[in-house]
Length: 524
Image (cartoon, rainbow, N blue to C red):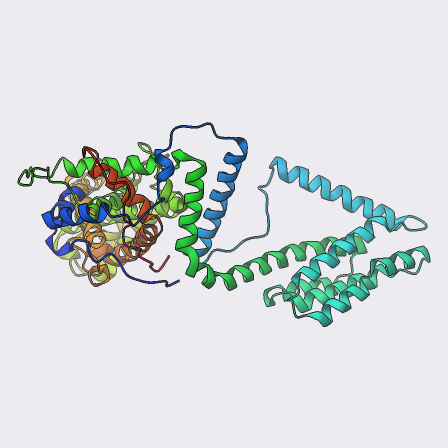
């Protein structure tokens, strides 16, 4: 869903990054300069922003229930809007409840009671049509809601055939044809439904069940059609929403902030930790009578890298990232898994050596096999040590098979034990292979985040990561898309927070800040 693919031009280039083992703060330190700091001071003292984060400085107040509920509604709308904009595959499914859940039991019992009453009334002598009329009236309104504004002919026809006053008169004269009305309704549904529902309509037309069962199935298919129409509407509106997405999300978040002054606390804490981390590594420079401060983009780039490596057990996710939490967790779990896969393959190639070098088919098979065995390593209950022992056994088996097929001697028991021990060792955080891979991955993402035009460097993965090249590029593309969109929406809020940190010790800090450049980028 392309919007714009620009990034701030004042960001630092990734060409000046340090060695593979550098941390994010170290890398971003190397990209900052005195001019960046001076420039940031000038831009952050301008009066380009008048309202952002103003609520965060207001005195504490007691929130009313209406304010809390209003913020909750705004957050719900923001989350839904954001999901539609950034997730091109977003769609609604018909409402389904978990099996054996209380809600499902209640719903099923209520529905059963309704259909039982309908069946009893229709089987009475003479039949009672009170429930049936209510049913027909509800179906008529649903069918009318499916019509486009210009479908006047079909609208008129539906109103004529499902004329409730006429049907009541037919009931009074015992002349109503419920089966005929059901047949007409099924025909209209066939004209209005999506092609994917044609089989469902065909089954309804060919059904020989009693009238109550047919109506029950009509409602089931109508529920599917409702979801189809909602999803069609979403797809039609998405381009319009994309054009207004940045302004809408920013305004909605400002509304939440106005009602809930503490709605930026976690965000401010996240940026403050990053700022203090960078500040601790900055050299002293009192030439102008001021300490050397990290530039605003340097702070923000390092903060974004922290988001990718976020430890959810230590800190709450910043409020400005909550709408992307599920995507971030999924990216993080994939990144950890592919890092582990790369570590395993590095160990295999360095331990076994020549007989497996350059055998692309074998490497790919080992990669996919390892990835499958580590598929759930992000789960808290996952036993990584035990899983790596299993990975080692499978790898030894595959290696012996491949070596035998190509006329090489199989792995000795001692070499297999060494391989198993080294692979199992990556379960420890201080393992040198694990540290090396994690540092290089972090360096790769840091270079991309700090570069104003990262597309040219997406394919330039560091040495030693070639086994997961395609996976890294895919993850980096998705993460950069989220970062740029997030910066475009929340840049003014970030600018205000960073400004306050930079001028915290100033005797007369500026009263307003200018926003960061408003990047509008392609979403996921």
